Length: 625
Image (cartoon, rainbow, N blue to C red; front, side, top):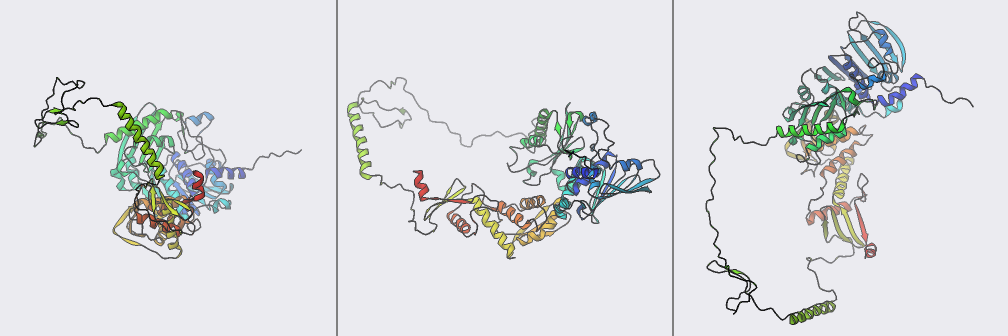
C-alpha cells in the first residue's frame, strides 16, 4: 500500500491559514496597522478603493525593513516578535504568529516599498499569490508602504461572499475605530475613493474618542481610574441617561490590544442594573494594563479573545470601580451642612394643630362578669356623647342546642335550593351577545396583556397580539414597497440624528430603500441627518432608536437587493412599531387587529416563523373535560 499522507505545498497551506486570518478587507487593515504600531510608527495612512476590493494601501513611518527582512517577512511563521515558546507568555507586541503577511500574500497581489531607518536606499518587492515576482532597490521614505490589490482574486468563492461595498466599508471603519482609539498617540488618516473619512491627530484618549464619535459625546463620559496589584484600569464610562438600545459604544482594550470579553462586559452592565432599562446598554471605553504573563492572547488568530489568569478578582475590581465612579459623579444634588453662611432653615409647623379627644377607661370593667339589666346594652361598640368608650354589653349565653338545630335546617335548605335550581342560577358577567354561526367577532377578551381570545363557529381563536400586529405592519410595508405606493406622514418637528462614520456609510446606501417605505430624510452636515417624514403607525416609536436598529441590522446583512434589505428594513420597523406586551386594548382596537390579521394571506406565522395564533376546537375543549 502506497503512502497517502503528503506535505501540503506552501501556497495551499497559506490559503488555508488565510481562511482564518483574513476574512474580509477589514482583516487586512487590522494586520497591517498592527504591524505598523509594532514598528513604532507615529503616522499611519490608510487608502482604500472600492471598500478594499481593488486596493488597500497602508503607509507608515516606522522602523522599515531591510531587503532581506522584506523578502523573509512573507514566509510562513517568520516573525521578529518572538524567539522561543516562552516569549508567548510575555508578549509586548500586537503581532507574533508570523501568519498575517503570508496569508495576505496568498490571496492578493502585493507591492511593498520599504526603507529601514539609517539606510539611504530601500527595496521594492512584488508578490502575486505567494509567488515573489521581483525584488529590486528603490528610493523611498523610511517606513513601509504596503499596497494590497485585488483581494481574493484567486479565491472566487470567498470574493463572491463579500458583502456590498458599503457594508464592507462599514466593517473597515469599525476596525479602524478600534485601532485608532487605543493608539491615541499616533496620527491616523483614512481615505476611501479619494474622500478623506478620518484625519486624526495624536492627543489624549478622550480627545481621540470625541474626534471619532463626535463632540456630543464629550459631556456624556465619566472618567474612571483604578490601580491595583493585579490590573490598572483607565478610561471612561457613559452616564446612565445616555445609554442606548442599539449601537452602544463598548470597547475593552488590554495592553494596547482590542478584546471581546463577555464576562467583563457583564461586570459593567451589572453596575447599571437599577439605573437604565433592561433593554438598554451603557457606553464604555476601558483600557486594562496587566502583566503580560497573566494573560494568554494565543487563543484565536484574530487575537481578540484573551484569557485572564485572575478573571474573578478583576471582575470584582471592575464592578467596584464602575459603581464607585457612578456614585462619585452622580448628578443627585447634595446638601453641605458645614457652610457657615448657609441660609437659616425656617421651622416647620402645622397650620392647624389639633389634639385627639380624650378617652376615659373604666378600670373596674370585667368582660367576663355578667351585668344585670339591659338598659345599657347596645349592638356593637360605640363612643358616648361625652367621649367615653362604651363596650359591648354582656348577655346570657344562648341555647346551643337550638342554635345548632337552626344551623342544620339552614344547611339542608341550601342543598334543597341547589337541587331545585339545577345550577341554572345566572352569574352576572355583563351582557354577552348571542354568537352567530359565521365568523363574526362578537366578544374579544384580552388575557394577560398578551393574548386575544374570541369565539368562532368551531371553537375559540387565540392570538398573540404583538405577533399579529407585527405581521400586519410587515405585510403592509411590503405591499407598499412592491406596489411603489409610498405612504408617508410629515412630522411637526423634524428629528435630527447623529451617526458615526461607519453608520453613515450604511445609511447612505439604504436611504433610497427607506424612502420607499415612507421615510423622508435629508443630509445636514457631517454625520447629521434630518428625518422629515415617517411611515404611518410610528406615533409612539423613537425614530432615532428605530433607524439605529435598521442600520445595525443591515450591517449584519449583505448586498442590498440580493440579500433582501427591503425585508430586513420592513421587519425591523414592524418589530419596533408592534403593540408591546402588557398594553391594554379597547374593543375597537382588539376587533380591528383581528380583522387586519384575518385579511393576511399567510397569517399563521410571523415573517420570522413564529406561531401567531391557534384555534381550540369544540372537540378539543370537550376532551379537556
